[in-house]
Length: 179
Image (cartoon, rainbow, N blue to C red; front, side):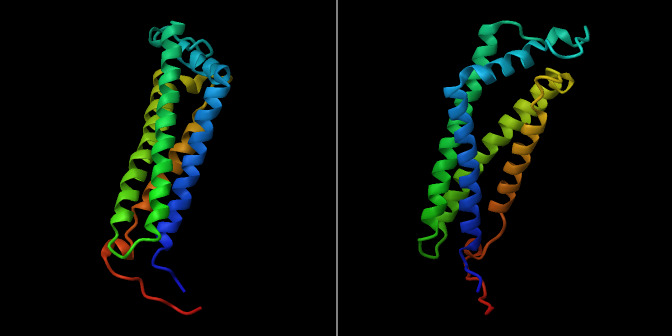
């Protein structure tokens, strides 16, 4: 038997998984500030790239600016975690609501905001700006493109799944089938 709430349950679990992930990332960056601080500093300084003189003008060597960028990343991660935790709670509450679907719409909106925050950070921030502008791809030591791509793709998959049409969204119940 298929439940009319299956998509909402899947969305709750996947959104919750992404919320847990980014909450742990933010927590790790707060409690072990120095590890990824060094990562951000090296990427922005471009000191482990090929040091092509046509690109090195992009480097940010000011530790104050590097640290400000790192703190901004942590704040963004923390906000994304809070939004995704709220979305997870909304998905959970939507599983107990009547058939009008307003809870699902609220959960979907909140989840969309949180997931887009992750996609902006990992896609625009780490892949585009870090990877291309600061040539992170050239570094053997400080290259986070694989991890950033993984989070970007997972966030995108969850975003697509949470926006699949559902019976709740269409205002009708899914047909039940016997196993």
